[in-house]
Image (cartoon, rainbow, N blue to C red; front, side, top):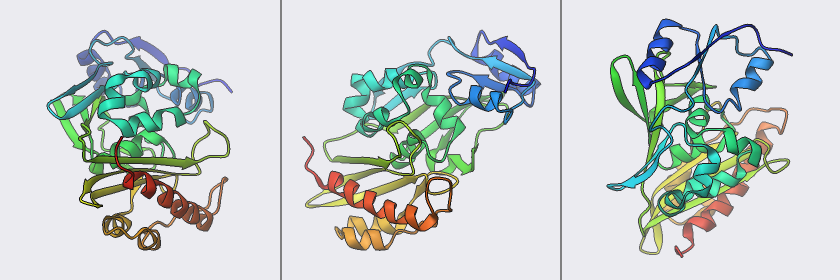
Length: 279
């Protein structure tokens, strides 16, 4: 199929992009285009205007400062995958990057695009949630910050307003006590996950504290399993698996009960990663 007709505008500044979003209610932003182009071709999206934001200055930065890692929205997946800053200060994101699609897609796809599109089976939204990160958004009234716990609303729906553009994500920088874990199950490497899990915790003595388990592929958004978090913090992996408060729906990949079983399998694997001493 071919997309429905649309106009095209290359934004020369962030303010211009926001102004165009405000002027055209059904406009869409074009960054990497790895999801957008597919939805256009299948006519799942039919905007009157595409606003090309590639090349806007300062939106592809990666920096660690004052205990926070900032990743600009136009940072390509491949750039983050190769980043020493991400590897050192945001190791959960580094673990997830090789699982995202294939190299050709990672070369074009953007961090901001993945977060804003909010596919419930995607890796990065779950990582942002597991890290307790936040999103920076710019709109007509300036900049605002949205916590990851409040950002993902429903299927492909986020707290971004129609006239706002996601400009960066921020996550806490790793410390010597930080523990991270990541695992997913997919039919083929690079496919969307049947079930996945991104997790963080803080080492506390011989146990864990501040456990955050963010599952993906099991609901309309990435989901925290809060009862399992509490159980895992006590050190009882079996109790954590038994406490998984997930109710996945059937889909073309697996039934709901199969997905819940696989979530338990991944929780056991990721629990092992969280409990490993940091190298």
